[in-house]
Image (cartoon, rainbow, N blue to C red; front, side, top):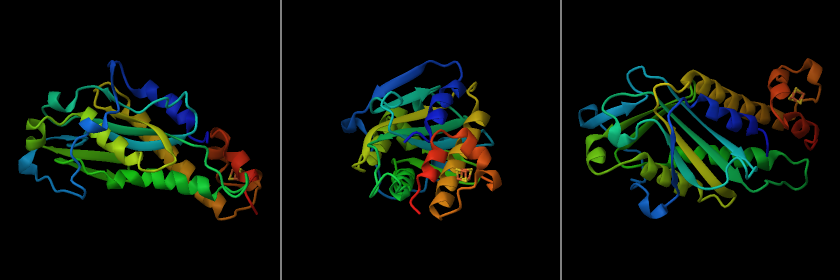
Length: 241
Ligand code: SF4
C-alpha cells in the first residue's frame, strides 16, 4: 500500500530544528490506560497541548514499506510533557506498517479501505489516564488536556506512545508503528494540517472509488488528488466491477 508514502516521507520536513528523541516500544512502560473517556477539569489541568489557540494537527498513515516504518517507536520533537509549563502547539502523527492487504483477488480494494479505516479508528480507543484528547475531524486538530496528577506521577510522551502502540498492535495486520509527538515552536503546523487534509482526501477518494464510480479521469473531480497520490489510479483501474 503506497497511497500515503509521499506524505510519510514529507512530514519530517515540517518538524523544525529540534533533535528528535526516539524511544523503542516498551509495553511494560506504557502509561496506564483508563479504558474509557475521562474528563479532566480545567481546574485539575497542568496545561493543554494545542490549547489556547495554539496550532495543532493530527493524522495517521498506513504503509507496507518497511523502510518508512522499520520498527515500533515513539518519537518526540520538542519539549516532553514534564518540560511543558503552559499551552504549546501540538501535533500527533502515527505511521503504521501493515502486511500487504489482499482481497479475494488483486482487483478487490474493499479490504484495503476497511483496513485503513480500522487502523484510523484506533485513535478513538486509546485513553491514557489524565490525558484527555479532543479531536476535530473538520479542522484536523487534536487538543489534549493533561492533568496535574498525571504530571506529578511521571507521564511522558514515551509512556503515552507505548499505550498508543499497544492499542494499534492489537490489529493482527499491524507489523510496526511509529508515533510522533511534536511540540516544537518552530515546527510547521500549517504544513502538518495540510498533510492531515491530504490524508482525509485520500480516504474520501478511496470511499468514492468503492461506491463504483466510472473510470473516466478526464471528467472526474477527484483528478487533482489522483494526479498527486502514488498508486491511486492503479487502484481505481484495477477495481472490481
Ligand atoms: S483514477 Fe481517474 S476516474 Fe478514478 S478517481 Fe482518480 S481521477 Fe477519478
